[in-house]
Amino acid sequence: MMKKIYTLIIGLVLGLMSIALFAATGQLKPYQGKLTSPQINLQDLHGHRHQLDDYAGNIVLVQFWATYCTPCRKEMPSMNQLIKKMEGKPFKIVTVNMAESKQDVEQFIQQVPVDFPVLLDTEGATLNQWKVFAAPSNFILDKEGNIIFTLFGAIDWDSDDMVKKLSALTTL
Image (cartoon, rainbow, N blue to C red; front, top):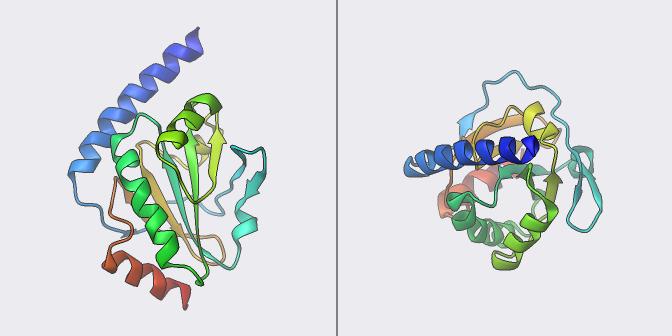
């Protein structure tokens, strides 16, 4: 019972923060944090385990999101388009749901289909390790898996400007 109340409170706080962040224009910002060698070791909706090492050699967009996050719902189609525009380049998207049940995530994905892995962090351990405080929270990783940019809030991922920036990173 306490876990449900805790999850509800966290969800409400993150939802309110997401709305505020969505109102601001999202821009990639150079990463200034102290998180080194970030890790992800989670299962996707199909039970397949994903680790960041699986994506070595690619620029990776890691997004933490939630089903109650309106900006997340609005930007996922642009992430699908970004995947298409980046086809043939060493670029991947990996998303991590923020401590919600598999059933809730599956219901969301039925409404908003995605073309990238959706990982489940049902206990919130990865969320805490990455020090994520709002949805959506985005991290761009270089080919060695180091965080190089962050973006808190939603953005039009398939804009010409963003595709150009991300494409340039894949050639480094």
